[in-house]
View 1 (tube, each protein chain N blue to C red):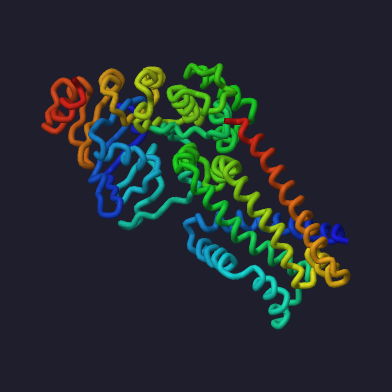
View 2: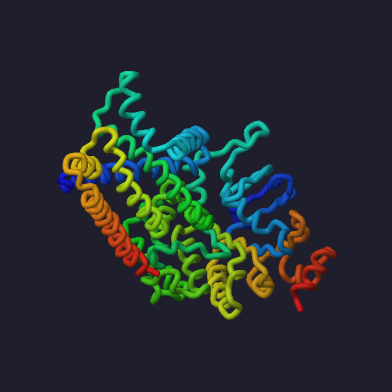
Length: 255
Length: 205
């Protein structure tokens, strides 16, 4: 088996009294596409956001290439890592958000090259070359000079993917990347994601797109109530789900 | 006559606006930080200067501080008073503008490995400029008018000249009308400048 990129052990997350994640164990290997499905409120997005420490786990740990992310366990206590270390960890994990979160005061190209220039200290000319190459890869070379407000949702999300790729991440995290899109724009984003997967990118994808999960996922996780209820290859999860809750969920979303 | 005072009024306004904005930005950043060593002093500062009369603040700096050995010349005292006062209001303006930016912007920036400071400087603050413009113009025009209170601490600005002229000539009506016109010219040029700037910022869509 390929080297593990992300290892999650006994991960728990509570918001006040509400326990959103109740003990998650998961390993994602290099080149693997893991798709997380489940009803809303099951903790899928929170799990994803714990991986790059946008949410602070309450217990357990997340290892990224063998390093604890964001905090360290020292004698049963969780001690935050220096911000600099966390920044470096995040720089190697790309994240794509449901609401795109492009920077509205920057053009598509500026969105893509900002972090390479400021964080990776790449010379501007080199960053622009990289940026244009990535925009071409997501089919938006002609929109480089456009501000996000003048782009469709699908185009914005593709720019956001290019922006994340510009940091040359070891893993890409997708948080319901097509949920905010008009139905006719979903396909273009999924296509870009499928191309990425074919190129061997390690991906963790939270989605409601069952077609994508089935065709692109190497492994599908079904989450409910803050736990991974069932996991397996897509043929098994969609073909012969074992857990009654998986069956119930799939019968609702697949017609 | 009045024009001599105008020079002082403008100088006082511009210098206080500069320091007030700097102070306001620092106080706003301190207030939204998570460090109580920053948030508490910033909150005390803002509430103190917004919650007491400006006139009292000026008199305190000019008349009370010398009694404990802190002697500040009139103009410097006025600059200090106006900067501190404007800074408190500007802090709230900037804080509100920063907090009105979608949380996802900071998350996106941090997820790319940007530090908090870098994200604030390159991603969050630039997005506040357009929203800051109207309340800042308001604040600047308030500051312009408030400098008239400096007449009470013996600063020879427009208002002081105007009052001196009245007591010498008894031309109450004429003098005060022209004084009002002078202030109006300044505040309205400020608004005109601002709306031109606003159009320029809007061009980006």
